[in-house]
Structure formats: structure tokens, C-alpha cells
Length: 395
Ligand SMILES: Nc1ncnc2c1ncn2[C@@H]1O[C@H](COP(=O)(O)OP(=O)(O)O)[C@@H](O)[C@H]1O
Ligand SMILES: [Mg+2]
Image (cartoon, rainbow, N blue to C red; front, top):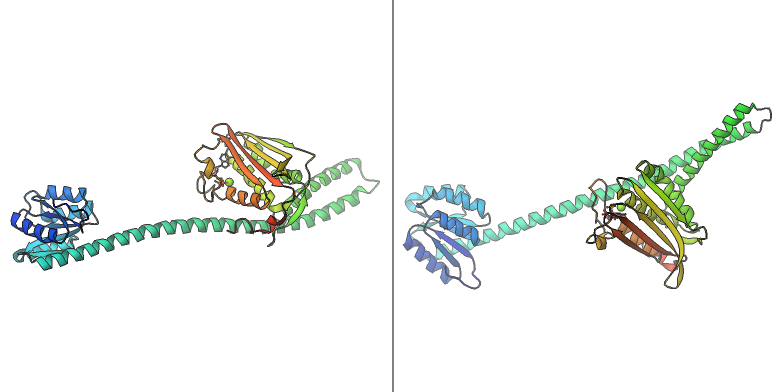
């Protein structure tokens, strides 16, 4: 082979006729193409694969295989390579069949240098287009898959938003009805001559109605929606208990024991109540997912100092599967998930981080595989201006 540093192309010549080969080698080498000559099909195809070649010139009859077969095999094993049939005028039929099988074109023997070079240049152009096409196909496939992922997430978010609105509406309606039921019960209970058994029953009904009212009220507060963030002063322990109320029944059914250690001396916090609820729910949800066989969920709050300012510290710990060290730096990245598609979007913790930062805080994960994970969240009591910054999830 005439090895050049930067060949214009790699050409494999498969022709049993040494005169044709030498002539073509001379013409092509002089123009900066690197040429590999093979006297039979097997050697030629092997070289075409190994280089890999850009153009293969194939002239029949080959001593070891059918020339058309050689073209088919080349197309299969080196799809980007362009085959050119070398033919005599008397066997043009062969060249036509070769082109039907995917050959780019043909060169007539005897060889004309100018025409040979032109044909090679055009074959190289077609190879370049083929590669561009393949690259674009790959990019398109990747873009389509990303798009479909984004659509799924958007649909999921939209569904949640609608669900929130429906829940708030339904809770409101149920509260209206329970108010009427409560009113009637209270009126009956005021009757002095009421039968003792009936009074007992009415009091039991009143307790259950009261429970339903509390649940609806919690639902209404949780699913409350509004364009602007609702910044207020609130009791964090109460919010944690309220939020836990949504999931604790389900977690207990999954054999998860819940341990709460909420410091009663916790000062009130200024922040976006809905977002802090979302943050807590998300972290609890992850802990739940990490304990499919059951375990223990710990919720702890205490006052703390953060950068010289007063704050609160929330710790959510689980005894679940834990996070491998190589994943730990990635869990706050958007779209990072180890869960099957239907269960995880990989957005939870990235939204949590955004919420925490808006509240002038920090979020950290400590974990050991097989032992469990602790998520530590520090929030400032008075986050100030930051809260009016960009909404989480909008960027
Ligand atoms: N408590 C936890 N225990 C084990 N792995 C966790 C825990 N919390 C988060 N992770 C890991 O971090 C990943 C990202 O979490 P998240 O952003 O909430 O997305 P998602 O829950 O949709 O996967 C999870 O897929 C999981 O691998
Ligand atoms: Mg999650």
C-alpha cells in the first residue's frame, strides 16, 4: 500500500488483472489517494473491513468468489464504502447488475485517468452524504427521545396541576356538606330529652364528621394553587405532620414504622408554605420508595444556626437501600433517576434543591448502601428577598 500521512481516501482495488491494478494505483496515488491492491475477493474484503475503505473498485472474474457476491458482502460489512464495478464494454450487463446491488457506478476498461479520478471523487462525495445522513438520523433519534421524555414530564406536571384543582374543589364541596351535617347533629345534641343510646351514636357520628372536616381542610390547604408564591409565617412542625398525614397510612401498610422527633420549641418560619410541603412530601416519597420491604422513617426538626442567622434543621432518614457513592453527587441533577420510567421522573430532588435555595437554605444527602439515607435540610427563619426570586421548576 502507498501509505500517505493524510490520504484523500482509502481505496481498495480487487482485480485479478495486475496491469489494471498497477495503472489505477499509479493514477490514484498520484492524486493523494491511498491504494490497497488485492488479487482476490477474500483478501480485498478483509482489507476493506480493516481499513475501513472509502471506495472499493471490484473487477470480475474474481478467482475465489462471485463478484456480485463480493459487492453485496462489502455493502453489508462496510456500509459507508462505495463500490465501483470495473468492467469491459462486453460485460456491461455485469456492471448494471452490480449497480442494482448497491454499487455506486462503474469504470470501463481500458482505464481513462481523468474519468477514473472523477468517478472516485463523486463516490467520495456520496460517502460523505451517507455519513452526514446517518449522523443526522442519530441526532434526530436522540432529539425525538428527549422530546418524548419532556412531553411525558409536562403531561405528568399538568395532570398533577389538574388533580390539585380538582382536589381543592372537591374538598370545598365536601366541607359544605359536612358543615350542614354538623349543624344538624349539634341541634339534635342540644335536645335534653334525647335517648342516651341515640346521643352516644350522634356523638360518634360527630367525631367522624370532625375527622372528615380536618382531612378536607388539609387537602384544601395542600392543593391550594395560585400564580404568585404564598409567603407566610407558619408552624413547620404542623406542616410536617399535615404532610405526613397524606402518606402515613400507606407507609404503615408497607411495613414502615414512623418515628417523629419534632422539637416543640421550634420557632415559626417565614416561607412559601406550599413549596415547603412539596419539599417534605418529595423527600418522604423517596424514602418510601427506598424501603419496598419496609423499614423505619425518621422525621426530626430542631432550631439551628446557618451562616450566623437563625434557622431550622429538618432531617428525614430512612433504613432503605441507600445510594451508591457514585450516584450521590448526581441525585440533585434534573432527570437523574434510578427508578423505572413509570415511577421516577428524576425531577423531585432538583425541584427540592431549588426550593431550599430560595429559602436561603441548604440540602444534603448522607447515605450508605444497604443501611439507609438521611436528607438534611436547613432553612433560614427569615429568608428575606430571595423568596421573590424565580419560581422553582420554571428554569
Ligand atoms: N432516600 C433515598 N434512598 C435511596 N435513593 C434515593 C433516595 N432519595 C433519592 N434517591 C435517589 O436519587 C434519585 C433521584 O431522586 P428524585 O430527584 O426524587 O427523582 P425520582 O424519585 O423521580 O427518581 C432516585 O432515583 C434515587 O436513585
Ligand atoms: Mg423522587
